[in-house]
Length: 324
Image (cartoon, rainbow, N blue to C red):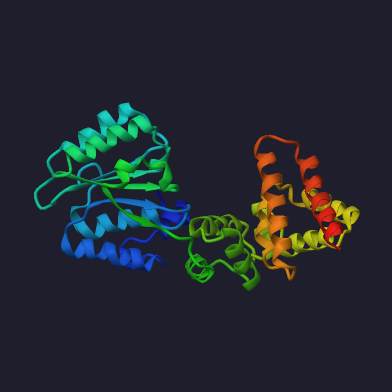
């Protein structure tokens, strides 16, 4: 594929462990495995876009160098596509039991989104990991480690990837923008960092989408493309509700939904994110957070968005009236 048509997240994906941004403590351990030319089974857990799959591929590249060959020295599978027991008994087992090529101490199998595997498939995987550990090491990647059965976790060194700091995400997005000769304003970069929320991959994807417009990327462009509300608008909405101005808050809510076309749960999520920056007593923040959680649950169960969002504002106004 031509470089011009490659997704930027792939074009600028780190190639070695030294290229990875953040996760310094984890990288220290992985570099130790490279130095020793030995490693246990690994379990990488954490939010999307924090470098889990990239770290696995960089580890393999640093370990094997020129001998890194897909389907020979390593295999990458997505458990969302191969979540059943039959795949474990065929593709995974066949790869794991094969003798490594000369010069390679063991093969490595990356299983992405491993938390989507059925319990039965995980039990079969546990037996495969146990039986063929001489030939193969597994790198299991997941968002939620609690969805991986304990017998597998106990056979792995578990590393928990944290969301990247805003500075790290901003530096990486700025680097990609410079390499691609994209005009990115300071406000545009701040908006990209805000929307990415620690997910570097998402930030770069949004940068590419905005960059396709061929204009200077501004904060307005970023929020319009992503369907997010500018933080100041969310703060204004919360301020009206906390001040007891129900009618004005409802008008503001309607304006935001019409302008940005965002979903109810996205709005609730942004309100929760902005809540803790308010100069109100901690007890009120806790009460509002409980209201947001209740409305988010109702929306997740399919309740009508318009009714629930207006109820959210009414509850905040009522809470304020009772406390005054």
